[in-house]
Amino acid sequence: MAVVGVGGHGDRGLVADVVAPATAQQRSLNLAGQTDLTTLQAVVKHAAVVVAPDSMTAHLAGALNHPAVLALFGPTSTIRTAPLGSRVSTLACGTPWIASPAIAAPAICPDKRAWKIYGPKPC
Image (cartoon, rainbow, N blue to C red; front, side, top):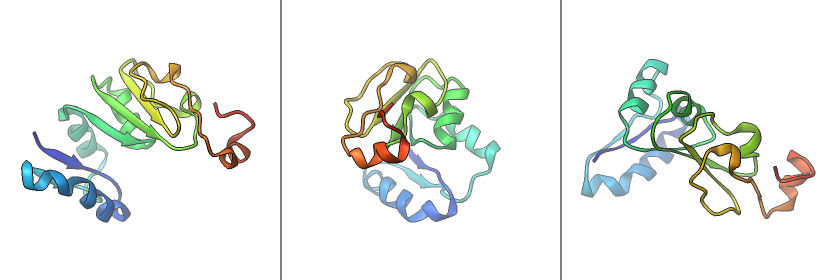
């Protein structure tokens, strides 16, 4: 199985760090800064699993109804901004992984400073 990393031009170093462990064991490819929307759609369509932060990639995978999407969140609310799609799962800071549609996943961040920025409630 190959590991393919995508992102913007500024993500190239981070993506290299993420795919590096897979390089010795299996094939890996760093496409950060090299994909347009059409190419990104093809990468997502052919991926076995999509793991992405709350980003274009996660939302595109959800919109394409990809069978295995894990969207990673920091202090933002998964209820408000999670990718749409019946097969999207979310993981937010301070919460256990919930393998269910994103709308059912609570977004609780233990850092109360984030609550002041994003609202009085964590969700």
